[in-house]
Image (tube, rainbow, N blue to C red):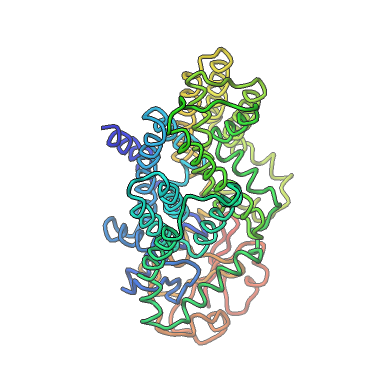
Length: 541
């Protein structure tokens, strides 16, 4: 019954309003466009963008989105629906694993902490690959851990291999890299002692290979090695070079996790309180729990350090940390609720500082919208200034959402100080869930109007028209997805020079940012047909 209740609550949290805001460029639109092109071209074996091979991602998540679009139509809701389903599966899995590790109460705390932390919750309402990939790789590691404690060790190894293979089919070889590094570090930490035998490792490797060969094998047999070779080379480039606009300092992901995974992240600091007792009595379960904690600490540090080293810095690269981070937080929250430990004053102060900063940021958003004219003189980016010209309705009363969150965080802290621990913890995580819902439904659509609203409107105005659409001076997938572009029979279309200067066979429309506009508005073959919120719209004469 509890499993069903968790699934229903998760569905209510993750499914409503999925289509309330347009997909965001790049990643969300990229994957959704690949799914749309699968449906249009009936080519489900290769990922395509602009109806050309796109080797950056394997197809599993794209297949999920394509299936959703066949069910709900090609729209933003359908593109995000698979992750909502993954969100339901994730919370049910966390309860099941937590219950097995300890008891129902621990499982429920883990569910509440995951759903009640900002980025872990928010990503289930997105159309990016990572929530699906993270669940698969986490389950692969969980079942590898279970090999040592299950009477059906071979079955656990097989399940671990299958989920590892699914992770590879979702995001690529990075799944194998993470799994191997986690296993290696775990082995070193345990001074060479490991419960996985060579037979278990062999089964994991075998079933991971068999699972991945469902696509890689078919692709090689059908089309040769070219596509797979390009795919592997891209993965290597991604890890070793910095994508334009996606660099950052070494501690980038440390800050992302501290702020983005609040309140869960605040409870990691409760580990700095000296030696603590186990959450169990002295039973055989102690060894299992201790071992799983080691696996989770290892996974956390492997992912955090790996993607701190990787040159490309994108927020969701460290999102696999959400599983070990929320588990480790749940261990401490469980102890707090049982009275086994108490939060120190500096722990509560840290929780207050982060919560108040986030609440003030939310409260400041509508005020920034209302008084943007006073902010503009301090903004040096011409494109950002033009974005702010978008007509978005704000009211000062909307600041109350952020101030309300500040108040609830303070109330939670007061309850913790007064040792009404369970009430304080529930208040903290439930209030975060509520404010996340408000932010997603109320604030994100308004922010999207600034960042890309005018461009999306332009592309949507071209739907159903047999035209060429091209972004000039910047990279975007939105022109393909929102114009519902169909395959073009003329191969010259892929040549921007031909679109600008050649003898085109149908109307061609262009978009650029005002920061790049000078080159194009004076082009002899282009005429400006509009300008809005930082974007310039042009057409071939």
